Image (cartoon, rainbow, N blue to C red; front, side):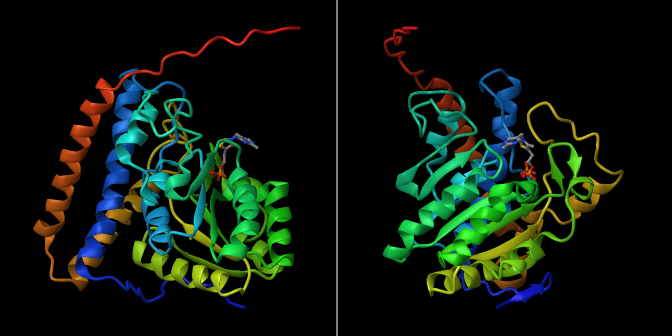
Length: 327
Ligand SMILES: Cc1ncc(C[n+]2csc(CCOP(=O)(O)OP(=O)(O)O)c2C)c(N)n1
């Protein structure tokens, strides 16, 4: 049973140059997607609320890069990145944000509750920790078909009763599920240390899950740890747990300026921006330089501009008949 705090694991990319650039592109797309949602929200184009994944891109991108077509993921209300990481159509996702008929859920789910079974996404959940229960349930079925379920959730969710129930249940039934705790240090506006006792990874270790703590901002480290965890879960070794240390660069949701952050904290984390680390890894290990990666950025920018134009021109849903209410 693995049991370690490992923030320095040697990266094992297992990728050729084009595949590595594709992963970088996906991270860049998530970053620009989130910035675009924020911009359109401020322009009054996005109904409801939004919770952005900015700063946490390496986690979903790295984990999902290790999954196969038979696997499934469950995300959170901070779920745009989770959805894009498994290949949900970015245009359909942006259309969904704007409540359009062409949205991935025909404009009925909005930012928080996207689901796309055709891309392995069994749901994004507005209920804190809802993804934990959904993925654990999915793993019961996946055990028969050789698939693995992945749950993404924040560190705040580990204080929910069903976190403990689900991990216990998964261990007892030896389910193929990988729990990914995205520890971004805050639950809404509350610093983790004010509400969370002990070490999160040890909660999983107590239940005898394979558990590691990793640098969640380094996609190459995430990929190595997730690859190993998914392999173990698929091989019948039972549920696995990864605590990925990361940071959201923006407030909890649309109206939060993040005033509770400690002075200088954001600047420190920006030095370890996951996009910077991914770029550095590619330049260090492949035949690539800044111009190579800049080209990827430009191509994402063009895609984003085309997506904005298409989303704004997309039709709204036609209201259905109003259900009659009988008391
Ligand atoms: C069951 C439940 N309780 C409370 C809330 C309100 N709420 C929304 S987000 C949030 C903080 C969750 O923090 P964490 O799990 O660390 O995830 P993060 O937002 O940091 O990604 C809370 C308390 C909720 N949506 N669901």
